[in-house]
Image (cartoon, rainbow, N blue to C red; front, side, top):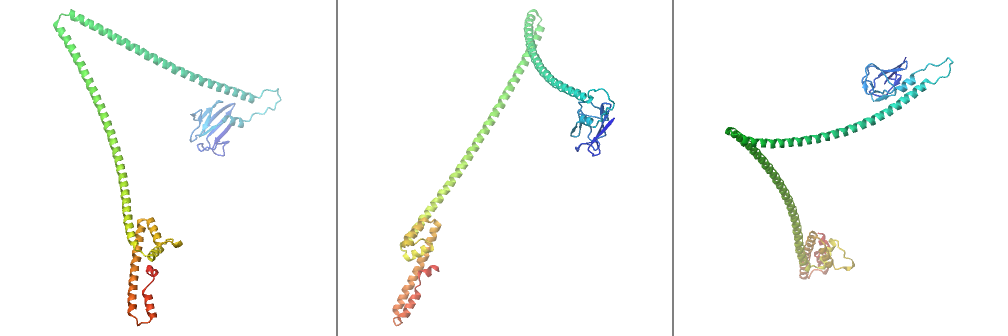
Length: 367
């Protein structure tokens, strides 16, 4: 007898690296050509052909053992750990039993595979044929039910026809007035019931028609509301765009009006503008006066190419410098008058006084 222990611990004969396998999980017992598996109270159990086992279970050559997430090739373990008895006695040569055993196992496995494939194909064919047969039976059943229904309807019509004929015969044959009243009462009750059913059907149809009309009205109202909302949104967007365009146009008009006003004021201020003041303004505005350019023309071009804000600055500078020029001219006139009255004063002192009274335009511009 040979015993092989299998588990996660390194003390076992076969070590399985699987966290779902117990430290000492199971034993393989080989005795007289019969192999058995024994579960050693493992945590997750031992499965043979998908079935959990308890205790010892005898194995067949094609059985599959699974522990945790691992499938054990137990046939290899048995063949590896089984020690055959060496033949020391000289005997006649015999075939290798182990080889024959492998051949037989291989043939059996091949037959099992072929048989399994055939069985699968046969089962598939049987299932298909069964489904087709069930479908045919169902169709035949439905056909039979349809025929039976037609037959019952025909029988009902025949019975109705027969009952009508019998009723007519009874009317002719029976002379009892009471029976006639009873039959008339039954007929009236049936007619009233039928009329009531017809009335209920009519009411149901009217209710359905009303519900349908209500649904259509709701849908149309919803669509109209959606169209109205869309039109309102479009109108709002158009109005917003129009307001923006109007604002832009108003801004442009205001700018143009302001520009015209500034141009008129510039023309007014530059009409009597001296070359000295024009030159000083160009200098402060950093205009190009090369090639002996006329400062008034340069200042005019600068004014035309500027925006309203810069135009206002140019006009302010012109006004400021013109004001300073008037002050200088007034001071010069006063100086000339004083120099005429002071004839007794030396010519040099008069010249110095005149020079001090008249300041250059450059110093005034810096002020």
